[in-house]
Amino acid sequence: MKPEEALAAARAAAAERDDPLPAGMAIEPTERVSIEQLMEWANIEPDVDLMRSTRKLGAPITWAKRQLVHILRQYLRELQSQQTRFNLNLLIRVAELEDRVARLENSRAPDGPPPSPTPPAAP
Amino acid sequence: MNVHQVLSGAGPYDAVTTQALAFRERFRSWGWGGRDVAAEIDPRIGDKIAPLRSLDARDGDVLLVHYSAYAPKLRRVLEMPQRTLLISHNITPARWFWDHDPQAGVVCALGRKQLPQFAAAADVAAGVSLYNAQEFGSDVVIPILFDPAALGTPGPADRAGGTDSPTILFVGRLAPHKRQDAVIRAFELYRRRHAPDARLVLVGAPINWPYDAAMRVLAEEISPGRVTIESGLTREELAARWRSAHAFLCLSEHEGFCIPLLEAFHFGVPVIARAIGGVPEVAGDAALLLADTDDEMVAAELLALAVGDAELRATLRERGAARVAVYAPEATARTLRAVLESLAG
Image (cartoon, rainbow over all chains, first blue to last red; front, side, top):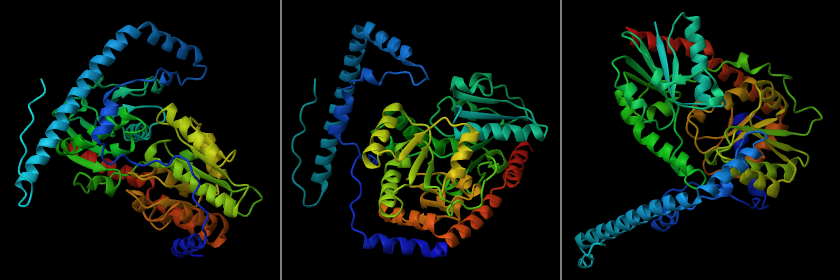
């Protein structure tokens, strides 16, 4: 068979089969991150199990790293809460702005609804 | 003449670092000086690449910036008075990373955003493929310096007729956009229908260990005991994988160049690949290319043809050898030298 004929032959052979694709995780790109997904990400919760050494014989290093996280937990919790506070507040502002833009765009559309009053800004 | 190479980051298994070191060997053979520096350095690289702060360029020197990731520190380099060649090695769109490696997602998103500004600031901006160069409006191509001699000898001309069970190979980072999940599925369909004793070998360093673990679990779920995932191979070990492969299956969704295509051609291994990014340009007529609409079932049937059809294998091997000749290191080195000498005036 010539290479130019192979794809058509493969398509024809595939069309004759009806066995299902094997199940399991399928990787897909994240085209647009929703506000809900951002809210979830904004609340940062690093998993201490992800802390590990990838070196050969890295078990003692993994243990030492996790001990360090444990020792610093009070400081890390403070860091985490400050960062999460900033992330969530920023996201709320973005969501409010998104709503406001959508309302303005609707009100400018010829057959759109009249603009609703803008809610007061968060304190 | 002095040419200083500046990298976004340098690491032991990184294709861009390998490329910069190969360029340096050429520069030495031409009697040129200069040093190689990077904004971020993996300690395993040793003293081959120096920190960016040690860059000491003089009047008349030329800077060669290898751009492959977001690196704000490189901005300072582009503001230097020396003439600059920027080679873009392509940056994967961030959408492939958000779910699996957010930090890589950030670096890719910012890197792609920054690329047009960096390209505009360089005296010459080139891509490793035309697809790559066109991303920032250039038509200057300086391909990957591909030296087949460094890979080892190809081995027997055709192993499909032997008694070995078919081995399907993919070489590339264990990363979301490389779609090893789809490779595993296509392989399992092929194995079930055509070759129950076939095996799949995936070679490539993982983006992180949770992703590596997830892929191993997936492989065991779909094709128990039939998939091997390896990384950190020596050059000899990698050559051995190529020599034992019956087909190379690449279902990657993003490739700026795809060096393993040329490696497969060098080792005489038939290639099945998704026709995306720089793949059609590099593969030419020497690979079986899948369209976007072709799923893993079509890939599985192509695998059966690529492994089983002797005439097809022979033609692909012949055409593959011609593609390797197109990317001969002497030709690439001549192009590189001409561009650098034009910058040196």
